[in-house]
Image (cartoon, rainbow, N blue to C red; front, side):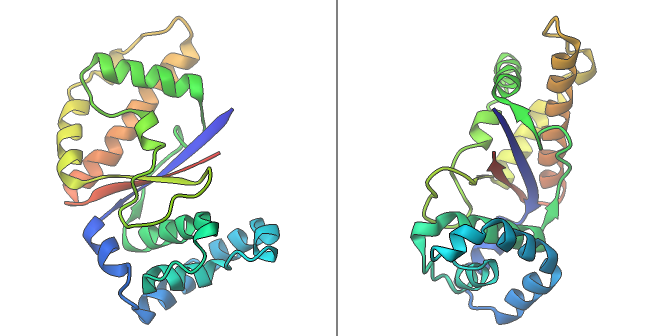
Amino acid sequence: MGYGITAYVVDGEAVRRAFGSRDEALVVRVATGFRDEIADLDDGLTDEIGSGAPRMERALEELIAGNIGSPEHAYAYVYALELLCRALGERMSNEVLGRFSTEGARRVDEVLAEKGVLLTVSELTGWAPPIALPPPEGLPGCTTVDHERSVQLALLLESIDVDALRVDVDDDMNEFIRDAIGEMLEWVTGARDLACGVVVCFYH
């Protein structure tokens, strides 16, 4: 089965301040700036909206108001949180980890463990959002790597000679492992350099 993650370098404190701020200007900023993305999400959730889930702009309004009005549709607020992170931060490249297999994730995790890096793809597919949201039943997921940890991880990942890695007889898997670690390094060095953290969203 294939999975994908999208990472945002964003100030976690700014996200937490936005949650419950009732900042109408911020709602307008996000809703206007990501009008097409909101329409696409609503189109993809037509059945769920028909069953009572909030439309995406409503979910965004409730998120910024700090009022999760439909916790049984928690996934809608994860999508709204992602839009907020995109507005407040920077979306990072996910050409590699935007689509991966469980086997690929397992092999990357093994290499990171061997190198003493306490970060795994599996961890990035967990549930630790930067604000208090009810977890959805299933996906999407959301997790956070704070600034302090990003600094530590950047130091560890920078010590790995990615180009020299060859841990599998399969050339395609070797390439995936090297590129995935390189991409994760970009995320945490971006967070380090901007004095931010990383918020990761996880999907099928």
